Figure (cartoon, rainbow, N blue to C red):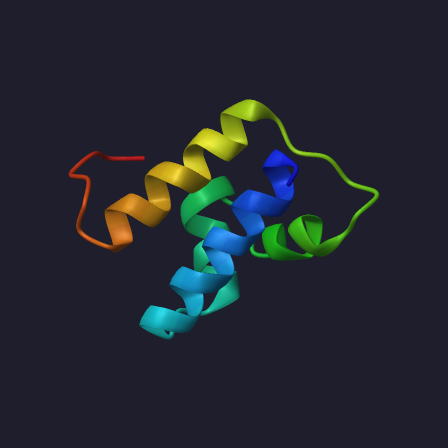
Length: 69
């Protein structure tokens, strides 16, 4: 699985688990309400830095990490 697909899978899981709004997730990770549209678009890519932000965000939401994004 590609890094973007893996990150999207993690985001979808945490959104479902905690009932988060996709726009709020986008703001928290990238400062962009339409960030999830980028994640769903197979033609758009994201940087490894963004993948790291997604992983940190998921861990933080689940209470497994105590870092500011």
